[in-house]
Length: 461
Image 1 (cartoon, one colour):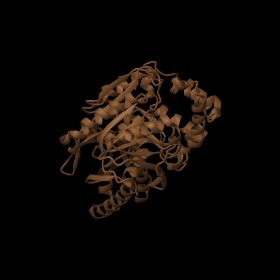
Image 2 (cartoon, rainbow, N blue to C red; image 1 turned 90 degrees about the vertical axis):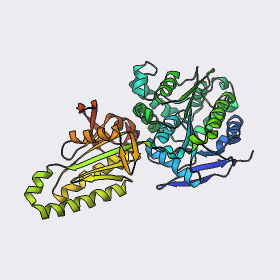
Image 3 (cartoon, one colour; image 1 turned 90 degrees about the horizontal axis):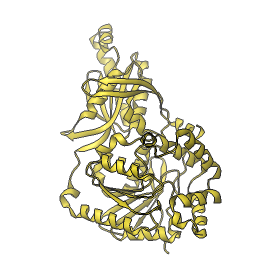
Image 4 (cartoon, rainbow, N blue to C red; image 1 turned 60 degrees about the horizontal axis):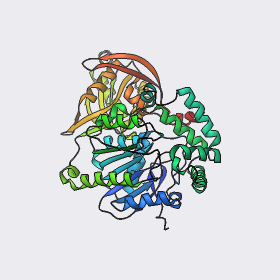
């Protein structure tokens, strides 16, 4: 079987391996689950057959996530927003303006977050066998083991990664119908060894334990299909919960126990083909411009600005504001923030990822003391309304209220933000529950560490 040419897309300073299969009118980006290898997958006939069938009704774009497969190895595993950047880089390199995204297992939350953040580039979202919207929810529902038990399992996974013992256990769990297939078990062990290191697997497991996407699922306005098998090792209740939270999501429940998408794949492919065909043929839906997106809002202001202005006098205060504004805008440019508004000594900006917003806010707060001032900042992620070069919506009001609760030199974030940056290395201290005027009670957290190198510490936890 001919293997498609493997190419590389540059995402920042990282190279992401990808392939393009077929030349259909519409694009489908396949986001793999736990580990993958775009070349080795073609050696498994069932996996290759799935790709070929999927490529029969759309131009198929395959990729290996950073840190796995043929993509660059990196320290630890990056957060979802960085992985979204990788998908966008692959789409750009493949010449894809808009695509349907198909996420498998762990790739599901990533696809849903991409669809909410970049609706203009997403025609549809399909997730199969996806993980629960959060481990906290799954624990509360009694669907998964305790944190302590899971940490012990992660250590064991790291110790046995790539061995026959691990391969046999994996196959029993994810593809029980192939549990007696010796050739497949050997191939799976090889795939695991060449696709990720034990340290990368541990970091990935730890990240997945902390992610909570429940709060952002209502912001997914892209047509969405959720597919799950009744006997999947991934509890079906999580898929049902996702389908309830995503507005208008279509839910398809299939019989069977195999989590692996390439085993008994015809029902999965049929559900996907029927759904995507309907979306692609609806010209009004396909051409609709999104005016609601998931975004991270950042508010900053100078602490004690009135007193400082009186102390300095009008001219010196004006000069100080000019220096402050230059400094803040330099950090916006560095972290890809978009300035929306400035009023006096405060800024309002948006970001397409919460970790970038936090690092931007932290960089501003660390730099302004050189000007003889202190700044406070608030960060929130939620659905925003776009119009007339302005950004509005409840999320904006929440972000402003969060900032108002911050102390001098503090970056305060909502619980939604904290739950989305798992894997980033950013750490927090709880600041309790605050009543935000007109918006109810919110759990807030202060950023205690935001440096880029902190991600590596995940592996050592």
